[in-house]
Image 1 (cartoon, rainbow, N blue to C red):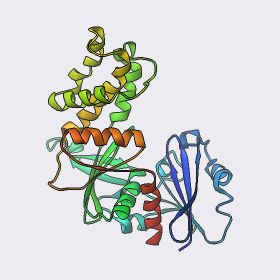
Image 2 (cartoon, rainbow, N blue to C red; image 1 turned 90 degrees about the vertical axis):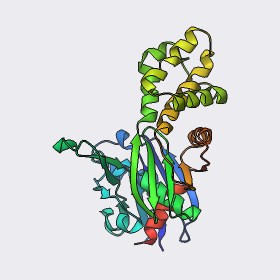
Image 3 (tube, rainbow, N blue to C red; image 1 turned 90 degrees about the horizontal axis):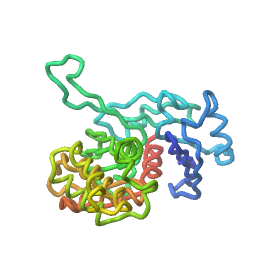
Length: 302
């Protein structure tokens, strides 16, 4: 095995890990250089400025995942259709520099749509970057079947069978939170900053969402509960977060005894673990180590 530079190059940030020949992370770096902050044609320059010293060896290999492989990124890596495993991803790497620098393709799948509408019979879904984290988590936990949850701006729920991603669904939970938080009537009631996390208000939001029929109705309660002094203003961001995450969980189904894994930041995975517990679903959490392990596993298949 070569030494691996593993990159997570997303919309807003660039993160890298330098891994030795046994797959151990020796050093990590992070930059505020997401793809939206890179000018056209400047990806090679940013790459060299941030990681040129690590790549200045003959035995270095770089694998990148995330939005760097989108149409707005360095080089478009066509989506790999589900079901897919390590082998399918490795076979469809988009090589920026043959044998040395490559981008991992994202995944696509389809959901049932409207049978009577020719253009909407099947509804496509896509991911970039999360697939690498999923495969890394499977490798680290020794799992071949699981339901993997990746919370964020666009949360992903991924179903894995026999070590392959069979299907997934995207929920715009984080983006809806930002829209309601900043651009709706609720912004007039909520405090300027999120402040300290209020666990009780969050759990109340999750519970109400699980027992309700529509977020369109429950969301307005973030305003009325403040108007009638039922909840203090400082608790409202946590309450609204609970409503949205609860709505995300409300329509989910679980297979009996299926392993549930949550991958993401400490704060978000903790919230989802709490919300899942309110539905009686135990889950384990993972962080950035999943992404690095996934890129290493893909490198091993080359």
